[in-house]
Length: 195
Ligand code: GRF
Image (cartoon, rainbow, N blue to C red; front, side, top):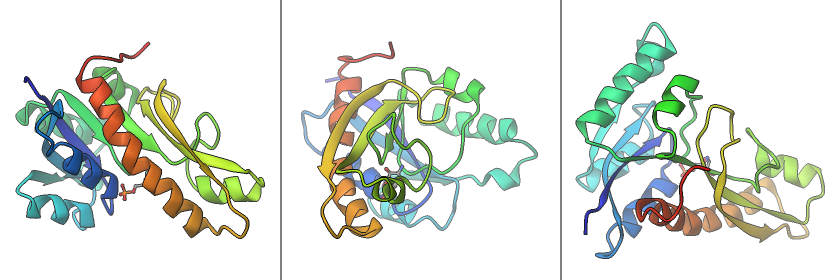
């Protein structure tokens, strides 16, 4: 099997990253995780990946004069890893149109809401404030518009009476960990493409 080479971009905890790493351990999984890059050197996910002998890199945008310069180095790192697919997993940097177009159809993201509802931040708090009864998460292609690319898979979770942001986030996260590896599988097997 010709496994696709995947890099994961993170900024923090890395639990979705870990879900992808675990999935890729299955012999029939069509992708391998070849590197993890964080824009924060202190991201716990970076140390977690390094402990599993996965190549890691950290690149802070503040080290560069512009976003373009940052992204040029990011591209060079991804090229050095011979990456086919990029998975954003809690990567808290907005990427330029130039970068997203370069990776069009080969870069995906997990977002903690049922898109197109609640693009951007604080999705759980906003769903609770609206009195939503159903919430969830979406894996989607990354395109220049924030959280606007075509959805690949989504999962619903119920909003329960008495939920806090934390309990709703925890329930949603469990669904994220389920659908992200499934979505990457679909892309790596060539079963989906950017419309
Ligand atoms: C997740 O909720 C994900 O949906 C969002 O950022 C969070 C990252 O968490 N994009 P983790 O670092 O994967 O644990």
